[in-house]
Length: 463
Image 1: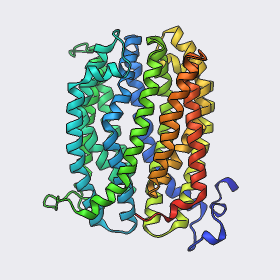
Image 2: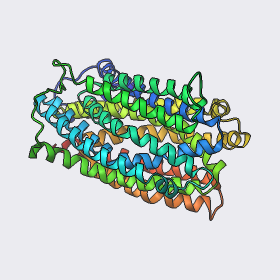
Image 3: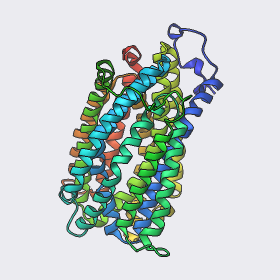
Image 4: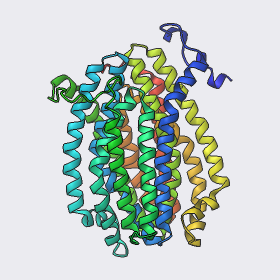
């Protein structure tokens, strides 16, 4: 098929050397993308199962867990920004076959991650109730949400540290390590959910608090396994006992140049998502519970895009590090096409099984009916979301993070919250209006990122 024919991905003047076959390109892409996609999908599924398990308690439990999502990611914003820089820098050093520089980057980023996550997790724990109330929690479930948020912040330090290690591993293509780490951690989370939420056997019945404890235990397991992945002397990334942990100007500068723009993007994303979530929360507890169930379904599609985005970042970064701009373009287009295919298939399946999917989370007829109608918007959003996430991964890995930050500012920080308010209240479209604004945000980012990719300037950025 011409759609998957890599000879169609480049203009003749862009070819630098003999190119791999379509089979070789997609095989290599699958080798990197499959573990990262499985990892991302499993994380999404475990999150959904968390919601399913607490959903049996009631709408207040669903709302309590859902209201903490944006505050949690705000706490993680600096770490996520740092990790984008880690993946980009390590992928380029891997392409250059500079093992020492890659390990030096990891060590210094890990120290930064430890300090930042400890400070922010502590502050979030202390001011948990104030944070969830600011996020839109009402008196009906604010105390429950605050307890849940406090507990997951205990495990957030370990989660942040494991994220930084996995970001480095992904940069050099070791996506299987992150996949195995998260499978183990989420399995532990699931087992303890079962015992602690409902009080099985000799365990106490802790409800939402039990779900939070299970999450923190899982985060600690992820931390231990991530550290162990760095104990193999023959690995590209190796945590030596007597390594030099001092900061050096070049490494910090490399991380700073990428992570600063990535942090600006995270700030724009978190402001927009926070304002959006807060607006939806004002529609009422049942509407917000419906919204959070629907977000779990949308997150499933995002997880496919995120997995492909990791593959794009690794393959594009390594290709640019090896001075093969033609391969960078080929791999970016290969992952985009896989993203198109995933979006179409997932959208169709989502519409066909919309009612059974909603029934997994709750037996509330109002939530099921309203959520089933929202699924049509979710299915349409999926196609643009997955391709947009993949293209963002390509641009970031090339170092074009200033553009992705600017596009996020326009679309997420300005367009989505403004449209949400207009559609929910002056036009009185309620939850449907909120989801239409989310679709338009994804569509704007899809158009902007595709335009930037087609310009081709990103392959000329030096890191």
